[in-house]
Image 1: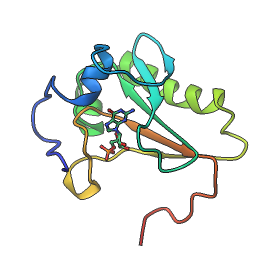
Image 2: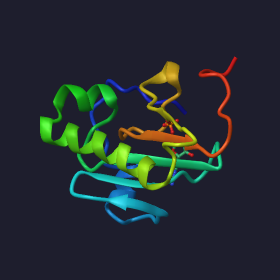
Image 3: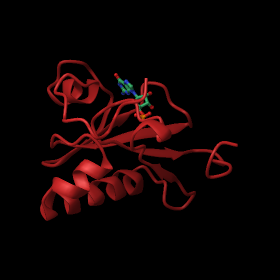
Image 4: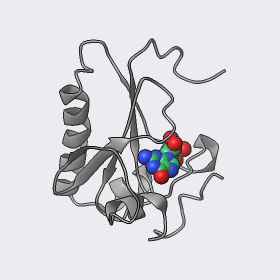
Length: 125
Ligand code: 5GP
């Protein structure tokens, strides 16, 4: 069910529960500002989600409200996760869904990292 990214942050979302350790995840990376873990329903051989630790609904919410240190740390974390997974040379794709038309389902900002095969056209036809 797609979410409305204009709504306030809901602490009951599934990624908030992962951050609090209430439900398990297959962790790839963690630092002060970010957590990365494998997607539960991978769409490519490598499908990692990177999330900020702060309470942000979407990329829009994050870029409007997060401070510069959080934004810099999060973007660097996304790059590091992909680099450490050896994805730079073969290539990878980043995706962040925002709101209903993109089909964002989890109301906590997440960047998808897809890799491990030819990823095809940028958007599904
Ligand atoms: P969205 O459509 O919001 O961009 O992507 C949400 C992603 O979260 C989906 O790829 C979905 O498989 C993943 N996901 C949903 N629930 C869980 C969960 O409990 N654990 C993990 N690791 N991934 C989840």
